[in-house]
Length: 397
Image 1 (tube, rainbow, N blue to C red):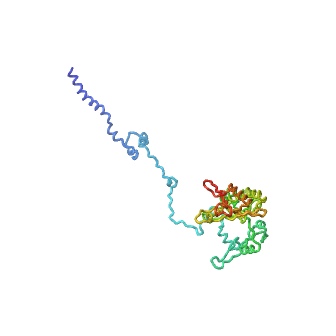
Image 2 (image 1 turned 90 degrees about the horizontal axis):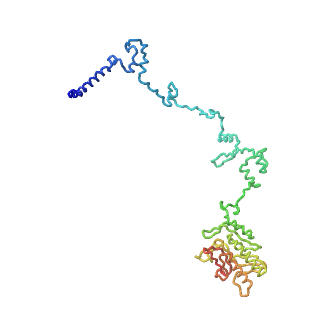
Image 3 (image 1 turned 30 degrees about the vertical axis):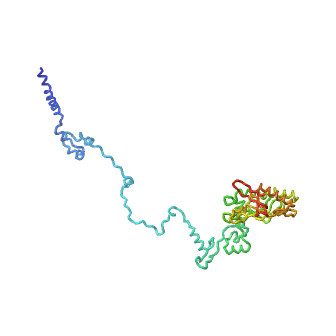
């Protein structure tokens, strides 16, 4: 038994291949069937008679049955964009080899668009000149030494304008355009009538943005008018960087009929301070001492482009900016004239008047000088509005 069990394995190895070979022998197709199988392309290319005798009618074996097994049909190719095929053009279009010709009279675009003929400006003016109906003066012989007017300008229907001008039209309701000779004759005979155009000569009316007077200057002049000051604006004074007045005025009188002799050219600020000093200090003091008002004030210096005390090398005076005024004499209405100078021992009223108005003037001016201050101011009062950084007021009493 042991020997038989040992032979099972070798016998099994030989029997399994033998059984497989015996089973696979019947799976190979016969040679006639193998030869009858051909590609579908060959079947479709050959007629049905070449297939051979199948033992039956062709109706039993239709060709469509064989072609059904053929390869799938190819996809249809799409035409190119803008090609003749896509545009539906069956016949080829031959390109023209000739040259594009332009008609002799040109291409009439207006006729093609249905628009009528339009006459140009140059053509119309040329026709008017040729017919002598030009609305403007036509000059011939331009470039020569004797240019002459050709014809007369045509009349323009401006009857309403002629009525407004107050002139009778010459051509039956038409206003004729005058030439230069007619214009000169009218100007020589009766003058020319022109439209009135307002002019901004008054600096008070000119806007500041157009180079007019600043608002501070306008306000100052309004205060002068309330104080009764008589003045007028004068042109700008400019003499370099150190001398000049931007908005000068000419002071000629104060309230109460007081005259300034001669008229002083100063700025508005010193004028306002001087007017207030005269009104509130000088006039009341003269009435208290002489029972008379002030008739005139004689000034010795207003605007003057010079240094202080006219000394070489000194700083520029406030007179160079129109910011100072010097008073040399006061005339009362009773005729008495009081000179600004050092008075004698018995001139009590004159000394009292001058001392009073001099001490009170420090409320209106930043600099007050007079007799006794120095040798340069022995015969007049000097008033100015010099601006000092510390705000100091120099009042020499």
